[in-house]
Amino acid sequence: MVCFMVSASEFIGRDVISVKDFTREEVDYLLRIASEMEPLAESGSDILRGKIMATLFFEPSTRTKLSFEAAMYKLGGLVIGFSEPEASSMKKGENLADTVRVVEKYADIIVLRHPAEGAARFAAEYARIPVINAGSGAEEHPTQAFLDLYTIMKEKGRIDGLKVALMGDLRYGRTVHSLAYALSLYKIKLFLISPELLRMRREVLEDVNARIDVSEYLGIEEVLPEIDVLYVTRIQKERFPDLAEYTKVRGSYSIDLNVLRRARSDLIILHPLPRVDEIASEVDSTPFARYFQQVRNGLVVRMALLALILGAVKE
Ligand code: NCD
Image (spheres, rainbow, N blue to C red):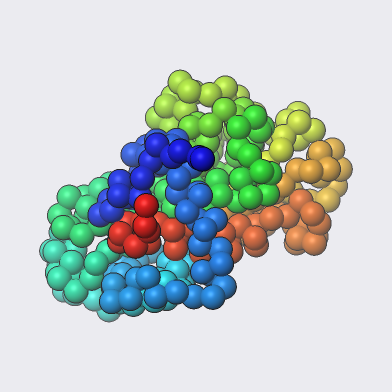
């Protein structure tokens, strides 16, 4: 008999603000529940019937918003919300604290994306219902990290023992901050590849470096032959305080078939998407490319989170 130290009840009513709020055992448990959601993603279910999820999106989104909505519908729940704050009462000057205190009267859970770092934590302090951080400025994007881990686990059969490279905008990219925290719960070797200007945020680097072996590189050449997972990210143009800085790094790295000649044959390439020019489209049809499977995995991971937090997973 398999014993799990973590139980479903620990997730009930819980906020998801930072990956740092979760232990390895909890993340492993979440990944297991996500795999149990796979058949429900096909058949649909009504375990969240009568529950309402509110999506409050103050920044653009395609995958995160649609996959949370699809996850809720697949489990029989309902969705309300906005993705154009210009059309909400925020336009009239209503603040975030009041907004969540209103929304909690209609919904059972809030999914929030906001340009300000700390916004999700702030909202969670005011809301009496759980808040899921769907992206807080350049800070974190925890549910993306969970689906990234799920993808690695599914594609590689394990996370421990792997060599993982995060490449691109490690400074302003929130997905890589959450993913670095998440990977540091496992026994992996982490390679960080970025232009000097876009090096990993110091606070993340120091935190992660205390647990796992991390090394930084300016280019991919040296590390490519040894890595198992390459996680590529977009340069976050919209987060640069000075566009002149952006023009210095624009187009500074790109993965194409020529670069990949030196990769292990079983390398997998992930990307949170959207992609701009950092992975050539010729890579899409190779066995390296797993970024579209990664999108699908976002659905089951978000189904698992919603079901757990809303108390629909039986022990
Ligand atoms: C990312 C984000 O919003 O941080 N997108 C996503 O949620 N998959 C990545 C990005 O915008 O580059």
